[in-house]
Image (tube, rainbow over all chains, first blue to last red; front, side, top):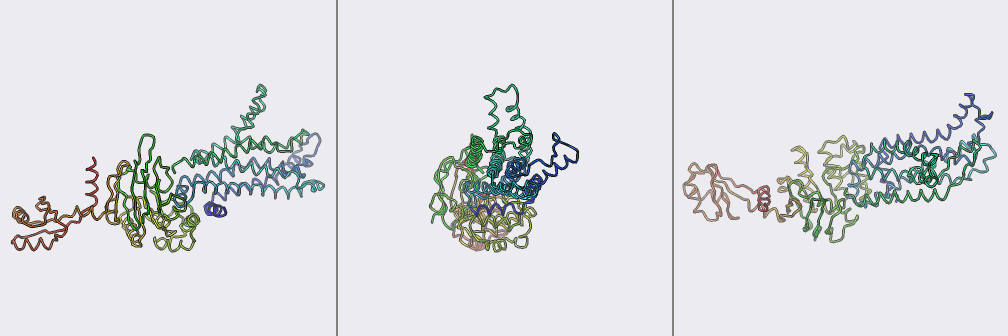
Length: 273
Length: 297
């Protein structure tokens, strides 16, 4: 295990795009943690009022709600992490590193396992960032009384881990299947931020959509992961928000987890390298 | 000791049979040349033996055992082109390979010295010339001091100096008693390096045998004299000549093994026949190879 991780580390530690993308993600993730209050202050200075309510008074940073808020928001940027997976595997395909690794004594299974470990470490890093960011901003901006509930609802951190991890495995499957890194990066970006949300919106909210079809979007590869962490910010419009993770969402996401890994394994096994 | 054996190894693509029921075996210490025109199935064969191409049918055994990652770690191989991460240095690339092969980093510097890359060890792979890349690939194959080495077209695309360097490196490695499999379409190369060879064409094995034996058939002696017909008459009386042909003002002799140019020279001197040309020609694998191919037309 540690040997496989070490090999991944040797492959990546001198690969500049890896550090650039990691840095980008770190900046985005922390600016979401710390930037929320800045945005609310900006709203306030612009004279915005929510029904006479001072925007900076929004309890966005109160424990335990902060975990759901921050994980939902940072999840929007997980595609940057997927780019790392795509670019590094794309290199290994183009430069025939996978093949050479097998020749040198890897099993295809070892190679896949090393990539899964890497995905796990990246997802773990994403969780760590949001955890530290949440802890600090919650302490600064959250209501002091909320501090007794720091470790409530931290299951959203777990959900966030699976959200990122499964998404990275999805990216891994796509690059193994297509072997076209540059196209895939553009394609996945378009799909994740534009195409699927639009189609999902169509299924969820199109007035004439028959009720039994509405749930189809729950099974989309990206939307299913988004559903792990329910959209939290509506609660500040005084609407009811689910603050639990639905078992159904977990099962669907787990289905994608098995599909992504299983398919990757199947393709690798069959393919001549 | 048997290093490698295959049984009816076959690879079929949709319409094409890349390799058809190949049986062959390699003994310890052989330097084994795998010959054949482009597309004859050499790389396909090696790819299957290294587990990166799935055989359609048939089996192979390394060291008498079914193939496994452990057996692959006992083999150092390069297939077609050197495969390294371009943004990593030679040392960084070899560290990855050392981890996979489960051997120590200590071998890295020594190996880089062997292949003459020690001075450039901390430069990125992408800055290397083709010859250096090829040498690094050979270094990577040598890294774990494996029992068997597989080189697939190791001099492809190299300049004449590079070809000589790589060839000398391979000969040096062969001297250490390692078993080497060398796939090439450069017959000259195989002739200079290999002890045994096999000829493939369109996925079929045409021939397997010793290089020495093949060359023996090819040995000739050329004799020239101002008066060719007198020379020819005289030589017809010489014992030990199997075949006598004349071309370009010379007699070409195919002789028994024991016949030397000295004997022929002395014989012609006795007959008072002036000689202006007397050369022993070593055979070439190229001729033998073309013979084998044409026999199977």
